[in-house]
Length: 327
Image 1 (cartoon, rainbow, N blue to C red):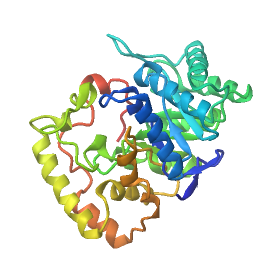
Image 2: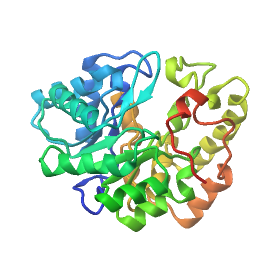
Image 3: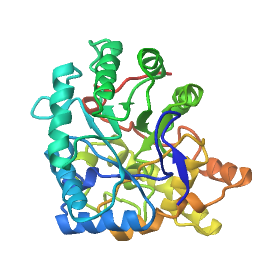
Image 4: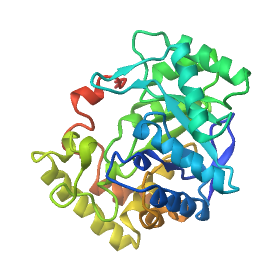
C-alpha cells in the first residue's frame, strides 16, 4: 500500500482509507464478527486510516472499532466526526458545547482519549465558520485531537476556516459520478496544503463489484432515497456503468479498483475512503494504489464517464439541505 500525507500538517497514512459507515448497518445488516474481520483484512492489506462518525449506527460503528482496538495491537490513524443531529427532524449543531460533548462520546465508544482528526460533519449555516475553527483549535491545544477537518463544504468556507487555524482535511463526496469538487475545492485544498478525502469513491456501490443494482439488491433506507437509483434515472446510469465495466475489463482491472485508482490519480493530496463491511469486497480494491494509469488511460475513462454523465442528483432535497453548494 502506498503512503500519503494527511495534509501538510498531518501524519503519513495509507493512500486508501477505510470508511466505516456500513459497520452501523445503514447499507444492510451485518454482524460484529463480520465487521471485525473486515477491519482485520484492511490492516493486513496495509490500510492504516479509519474514518468513522458519531452517528454511524448511532455510535455502533465507533463501538466496533473500539472492540477491535481492545483485542488487537494495531494503532491506526482514526478520524471521526460530529455535528449532525439525527432523529425525526435532522439538524446540525456546530456549537462548542455540542462538538466537545460528542467528541467525548466518541472517545468512550472508541476506547481512546485522542483522535488524529476530528471533522465538523456539516456546517451549521447560521454559525460563522470562524467560531467552529476556534473551537477546533482549542481541542488541538488541549491535546484531544491532532487536527480538524470539514465535510461537505465549499471552497470559501475552507479559506475562512483555514485563516483562523490550519485545516488538516476536507471530506466531500467525490467519484466518477460526483465531480463537483473539481469546481475549485480540490484545487483550493492543494493550494492550502489540505488533504482532500473523497468519500463514496465507488458511487454508493454503483461502481463496485458486483455493481449495486436496485433491480437486484436491497438498497436499504439511505440509498433508496438517492435520486440516481430511482426508477426514472437508474436505467440511464446503468447503461453508462456497463460501458465503464467493459472498459475496466479491457484494461485488466476490477471496476472498483480502477475507480479508486482514478481518484488517486486526480492529485497527490487525495486519500479516498471506500466503505465496506465485507473483507471479500475490500480485497477487490485494496490494491488500487498500485495501479498506474497513463494519461491515455485517464482519457479513456473520461471518454466513457465524462464530467456530468450521471442522471439525477446525488442527494434528495432533505439530504442536501445541510450541504454547501458552490459553482
